Length: 205
Image 1 (cartoon, rainbow, N blue to C red):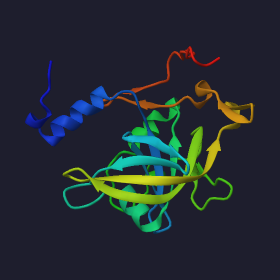
Image 2: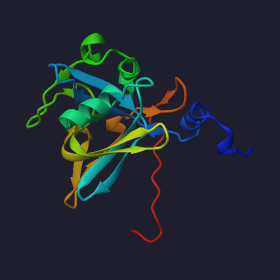
Image 3: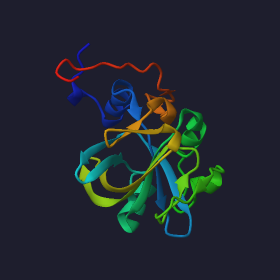
């Protein structure tokens, strides 16, 4: 089957892409609502893009035809945010937090999601997630015809569950099974890590 992308609507292309670009890591993003509460929402158009400085990106759409999603608004206005890698056991909280709520209404309070304060950062992190990237806005670009908000976050601190961490040759080594990352597929489908394959390149010992 050959798909001529120009013959499909934006909604049709979105539905196709999220089924084909799989699995995708989930960025579970906590941001400041500006009223003493916090927004929490998942995004799977997400990845790390540079190491110097360390920067990650998330792509955020619109709440409706007139309003940006709360994450976009909050980061644009208040800069700090926390990106979590949720565990498989948090799938229902992740799904619930994708619900559309009025701006300023906290998913954390609405769905009873526990948080705690990481040392040295103004925003809390979600309890139970194995990784939390403490970020500040680096840049926001509007991209595409809709357009999407391409949010770049400079990573200032990273909280990692100690059980997943070891050290070798002055490097931090992560046990992916201990991270237990939740992955996004299309529609209502998610995935777990599954079998881990270890493959060495022939040009490296």
